[in-house]
Length: 324
Image (cartoon, rainbow, N blue to C red; front, side):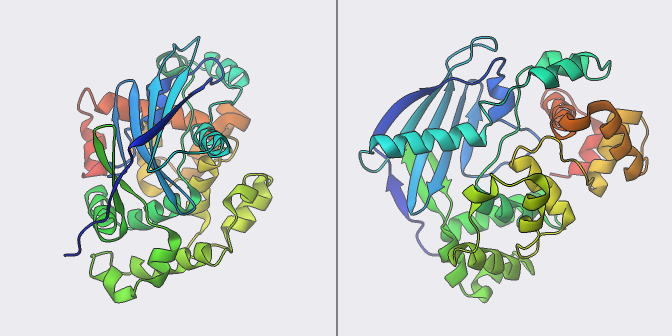
C-alpha cells in the first residue's frame, strides 16, 4: 500500500466571525444525519475540519465563543506557512458561506413559531442553518452514496482518502484533506475500481475531469437564480434531478424542495403524517403548504431533529432504514 502523504500545519491565525442572531452553533456545524468521514471531527462547542482552496490545504477549528442570542464563532486557521491578510479573509468568507452564518432567519422563525408540529423543533434548534462543503467534495460524497448502504459509503470514501488524500496534522488532530480534481482525473479507472467503488469509478473520473478542465465555476454558480442554477448543475456528469435537489440545499436555496428519495419518503411519512408510507406527491404538497419559501430549511430542521434524537435514544424504525 502506498504511504499516505502527511502535512504538518504548524502556523495558525485566529479571527472572529459574528453570525446573525439567533445562531445554534452545534446544530449548524454537526449533522447527525450525515455519515462520518475522515475530514472532520466534532465535539460539543468545537468542530475541526479540513478545507482545500485551489492547491492549498488548511485545517480549521471552529469554536462556539458566544450564545444563541449573542453569537460569536472563533475560527482558527492552520496552515503550513504564514498567510496573507487577503487569504485569511478569503478563508473566513468561505467558512461564513459554508455555514450560512449571515442569513436572516427572522421570517423563517416566524413561520415555524405558528406551526404546531415545528414549534418544539424550533425551540430546540433555534438559529440552526444548513451547512455545505465545496461543490466538488459534495459531488464526491453523493457519488459514493449511490445505491449503497451507509456502511458501504463510509468504506468507499475512506478508501479514496487513503489512496488520494493527505493526512493533515493540526491542533492535536489528524484528519484527511481532499485531493484536487486533477488527481482523480489523472488516476487510471482500474486503480479506482481496486478501491472497491465499482461502477462509480467512471463517475468519479468524469466529474473530476469537468472540474480539472475548468468547466465548473462554483463561485459563479452561487450568483445564479434557482432555475439557472438547476440548469447548470444538470450539465455535470451523472447529476440528475435527485442530486440537484440535494445540491440546492448545499447552495442554501431554502425555497427548493422538489425531490424525496425512497428512504426519505419513509422518514417524512412518519414525521409529517405518522404513517409508514405516503406518496411523495403528498409529502411535497404538505411541505409546500406548511413552509412555502422556507420548505428546504424547515424540512432540514425536522430531519436533523430526528437524527439528534437518535444519538440519545433508539428509534427502531429508523435503524432499519439506515443500516450503518
